[in-house]
Image (tube, rainbow, N blue to C red; front, side):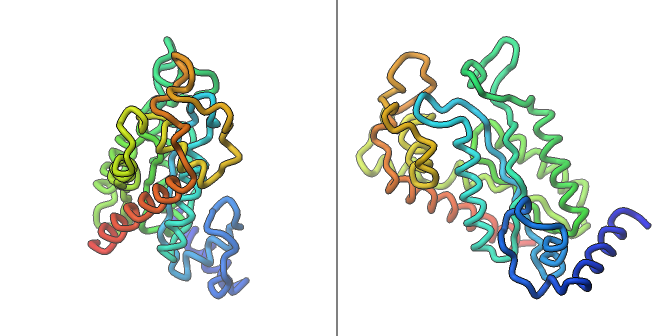
Length: 266
């Protein structure tokens, strides 16, 4: 008996034993479910899974290292619930963040963790391979930080080439991060590029304020982080939870539109 046949047999056994296909799942997060609940969901048509990726990186004096994780977990839940047939894998929090020796990029600030691109891609690849074994047929790669976008796209392309004709597809959902329109919307509210910034400025500070405000040190916000080398580009004092709610919705909507186009076209 090969691995996929054995997995299928276990799945059918689980569904028969507990009538799990008829039960409503308590969560869309794989790490909050039992294996029998997941098996039953797959048998009942939940065959889409999201692999979220997020950097563990400095975000200036005012935002915690796990900013991207909290944001992408929230977004992934919303996307999965909107799709109605999707689960969410644990967030990949080790991504490329700069060189180790000598440190570059975010690695110059304490607490950042970097994984070389080749190892990051292997991590994502084997996450996808694992989920395929269990019966997921549409695997969505969604990243909330810039350094992991290219790697996810390369993994999707390579696996789709290898799995051609198998009925399983890997989809890189790049529009979530790079084509959501949030930056343009904030500019339309009257903020110049110098205020918006490129890291830990208005955009990501606003979104984290709307998703997990407890992870922002509000009294530490300052234009440019308040000192040279702070790691902040932009003015986080201009951020707001209201802006963040708009940004989250725009990101989720962009992802859903791309997902539906990709899956609907298969």
